[in-house]
Picture 1 (tube, rainbow, N blue to C red):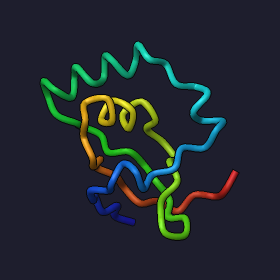
Picture 2 (picture 1 turned 180 degrees about the horizontal axis):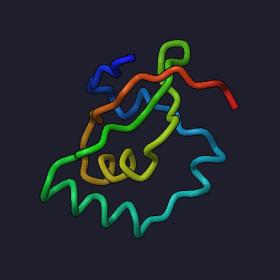
Picture 3 (picture 1 turned 180 degrees about the vertical axis):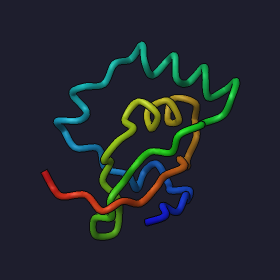
Amino acid sequence: MVLKRQMLAIQDVYVPVKRRQTLDPQKVDALAESILIKGQEAPVLVRPDGTGFVLVEGLHRLEACRALGETTVPAYLVQARKH
């Protein structure tokens, strides 16, 4: 299966509460700095959920983009089971 990279609105990506609890602000800052220099190298992984998307992988990348004032984030749509 080939994953298709696409740009999604950050506001359309829901971050589950359990995942949000693992957020490390220092990692977000370091990633934001890296994204400014090199761009975002790895898209986040999301699964479709109704009209939006649920974050599967890439919390720090998502939050780094948000911290930089971005409104979109590169993402791959994946099939993932609900937790």
